[in-house]
Length: 340
Image 1: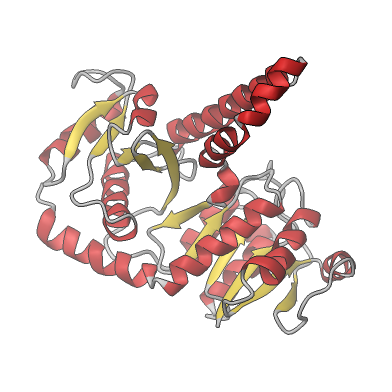
Image 2: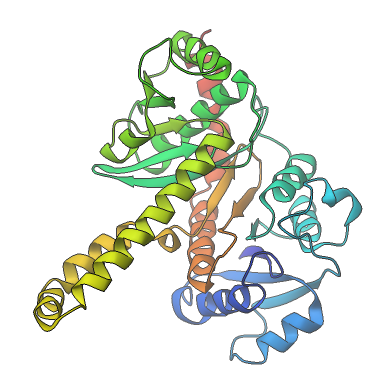
């Protein structure tokens, strides 16, 4: 049985949406899958929330945690708030009492805690948040999307290797193309970091296509998008904001008069399909790649649909033995493919 620990107190909509997502998964989407959920947080609050639902009590456990790390607190709050829902949840992973941990809480605290408590895959200096972005040809995997704001050049090589291993094994893409996010495609463009990383990736035996601009990601120009967490988070949040703006504008125009409403009705299936491809909740969250246990960071404003998506992603990782495969592929990649 796959045991998933979930931070019930993390994020803007906790614990309401977190609990709803956990129960929804058990009752509707994962009834045929063997999972158990541990909700981590203030027990009395979680129990009160669970009273609104009918569910198999054998499949939901509550692990009490008396403290909460807020999104605006320093990452190292994990040292002072040892009974926070993030720390307690990560301890469940460390002690092998859970197979994965999901949180919508502080990204910095989650990264710091995971790095300190969970072992890294051999050869990886820092784990990265990996986010799948839709493009014209399918998906690109962006690393890092917000975990490591300040990066050394060697970190971005690690991100490239993790991205290659993920895309080869999960999406079946042979010899994935790697692109480095920059302010221009020319070799000499960028800051000190990107210039150094360009030289490293150019010397590595990988399918490095060079610098790419953020606007090119949606064209499917590469399979693995590499950048520091600062740039990655800006790309992700900008894409999310404009996606919402565009769909809200289209909805407003299509409901502005009777003729537009008729046209909207006739095109309903097409619009629904397009919207689904941009829906972050379909993916659910971003895994920290590079750890020997699965940690998934969901959006800070995660709804129950995001939690359902994250639980589904966790199950697929576990059932597909993804951690073991990433470790194996990283060993092969590091030992045989990369020569600098």
